[in-house]
Image (cartoon, rainbow over all chains, first blue to last red; front, side, top):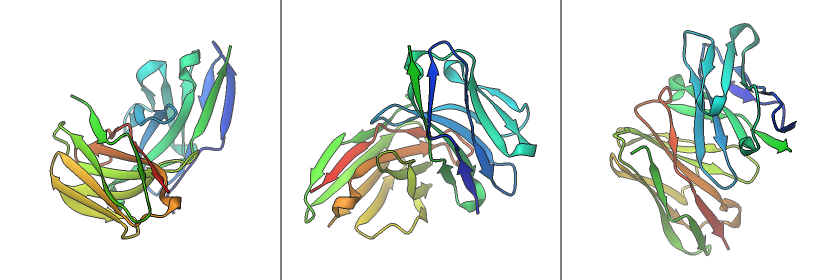
Length: 114
Length: 113
């Protein structure tokens, strides 16, 4: 079955430190991959997406993600975290073959300590 | 305009009430979605409309009834809900498919009493 796994429920990093959030997917073909961010009680905002081509994609707010087919991973990174990055981050897979579905991982809550 | 507007922002309803959630976008998107999000959980897909036609119903109970009157508007009609239906209801839209960026509204916080 198609699935998205985010193994870390919570991550705490110091302001200015680097960040990596993990995402693994289980899917027969190369999926459409996304990272979204959600602040408490708010909607979701797209950070970046991968469809094909260059496996390192740049997004908004200084985020980037790398697609690794061999590891079925799409990890999100940021070289220097700001306090305003504290939020919940969702990895998602677009499954057009299954009728236009967007399926989310369980999410990772990022806490930033000063 | 890259906004998806949801109204109301908050809704409290009794189990015998009938209410509706509204979602509007003016980006020319032809795919619109309803998601349900419980606290500390990811969004769960409920319904997908493509070109104003219902294309996915994720086995949602009939007390939730979606409607897409035109390409800009999506409604979710609620009737005889249960307290466990209390959640954040998110509307989203994308140009045509999930390969396109999905834009999300701020959500309606629903409490069923």
